[in-house]
Length: 338
Figure 1: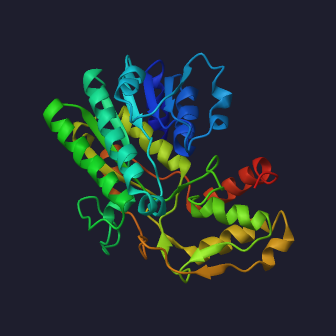
Figure 2: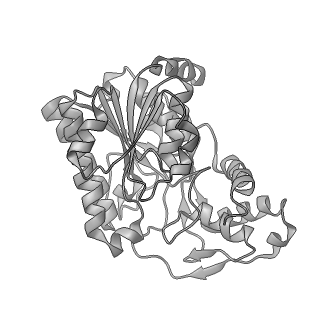
Figure 3: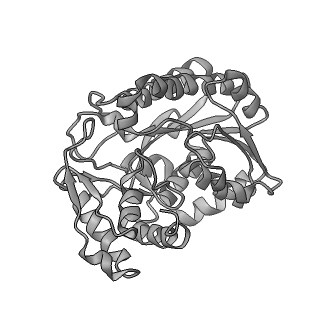
């Protein structure tokens, strides 16, 4: 199956694909991998959370076009997607804490911006609209593993916006015959993920602080679990969503994860062990335990059976291997900056 996916991905050669949020962590990795198979990539990003350096190496590629624009501007969405076959909608204002602090901007970007992109897809006759959904849609559901058809009540403004995206995609597929696929990302991590800032994700935060010989902060007692998903698994899911010819796979939402979880304290120990190979002083650093964060859940674990059955998805890299790859990248690229 993996070889079939790699071979079939070559069919994307010369396909014109718009990636919103293409200068972000996930978006720039998608840009890189699509350029490798010969796709024509248009990147739309306002650089509010994305970074120009993430796409700097692509600028000279004749198959790459960068448009600095905002998904809240409908005209820019229509212009950027003109002539495209596919849209990969990755642009969003992430972070549960940020949405709690500023729900208005989160709503404007994640809902208004999403609707603009759907309207652009409709107007420009886009073949398929693949979008970043979120595991936050499961809300207060305690059912494990998380199964796509069973969700709970949202726990944050961010979660509400991402679930509304699914509702809009579903109704646009029914009313306007737009092929949509939503990918509920579970704690994605890997190279190019920003370790800085108030809303940085946990893995780059841990790596950053340990490299600086500082104690990472763990929200809660460390026993919470997450299904961490290395970026290559996300890239595979996106490619499978683009190339699938299975009609039953369309207009659906899929968990994008590994189907395994790990506790936060175990994650810390794994990162600490790997980084200690570069700096032995890191081995003696202890984490600081803070209060449990509002809007968080205690445990998360995805069922990936639906993605396997309908898209042929099989995770490429587990959390331990992903952590090793990420640490090597951060040590080589970021240790003097973080």
